[in-house]
Amino acid sequence: MVPVDGESPGRADYLHRYPRICAHVIAESLGYATPGVAASILKDAHEGNENWCEWIYSCYDRDPGRAVRDAIRKRHHHEGYMASYQQALGIVRRQIETGEGPTLASWF
Image (tube, rainbow, N blue to C red; front, side, top):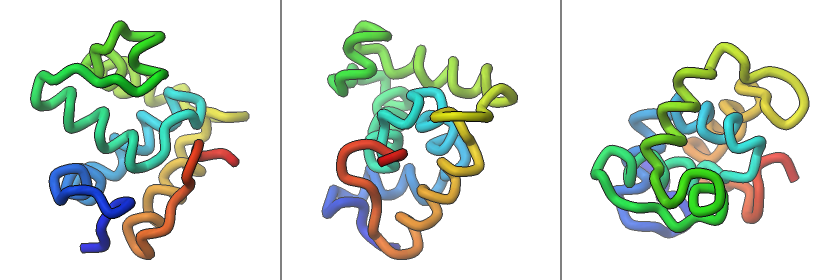
């Protein structure tokens, strides 16, 4: 397992176990979330923790569960500019395979 941005195994585990959900979180965020951030959001949602990522803080009042639910509920609409699930999944897979991922946002 390739570590995610040198983070603890917990976040890397979520990226490796749930790559498709992480990709949908990226698409829902319009590329704001990197694969590591998406995994962190999913982990915090699962554990019932607040998440202080700017997107979650601003749009979901620190509740990552709402963001994950929206990402799953709207998964069939993740297409097009800055919301492409296929592009997000490619970025997630590259991070899993090589450990290399975007630093600031997924589409840049």
